[in-house]
Amino acid sequence: MAEIIFFIFILFVLRAFYVMLCCPNCKTLKSIFSQIKTEGIDEDGREKINCKACNHSWKRSPHGHDGGGGGG
Image (cartoon, rainbow, N blue to C red; front, top):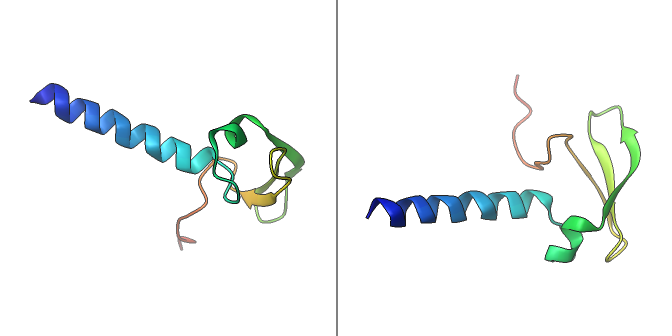
């Protein structure tokens, strides 16, 4: 039973990393390995990423996650 719970937990963590790293436009596994940084960190503290698979550009935080509150 503990092995099943551990396996489900590992799958959940891997799914979270996949969502954080894939392109928000094409959402393929190929997009994880075809991303390039087009600039350094901008004034908002976010980096601009370009997907070579679909040529989509977006900004994400340097830690790789898009969500979260402003905190204050």
